[in-house]
Length: 82
Ligand code: SF4
Image 1 (cartoon, rainbow, N blue to C red):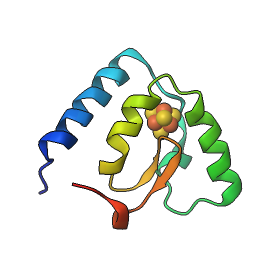
Image 2 (cartoon, rainbow, N blue to C red):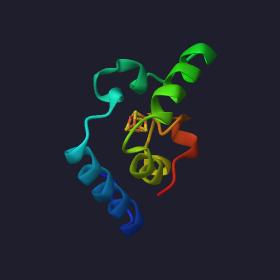
Image 3 (cartoon, helix red, strand yellow):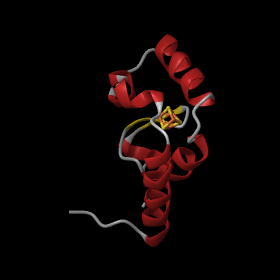
């Protein structure tokens, strides 16, 4: 089991508060959790994120995400921050 740093935990709390106010388009789009996205799909997801009402909160938490597509970028385990 991993534990989050205080900074990551604060970012997660902020994201959860934003999610309580808005339902982002990625919620019902399984492409956001795929590991292997082609360029066309990445560009399509980036356009969705560009218009997301919780982009700022998602962007703040995104560096701590283990994988998936967050705030306009593909995240990979190698780039994960703690
Ligand atoms: S910015 Fe974050 S919450 Fe919004 S659609 Fe993109 S991945 Fe989802």
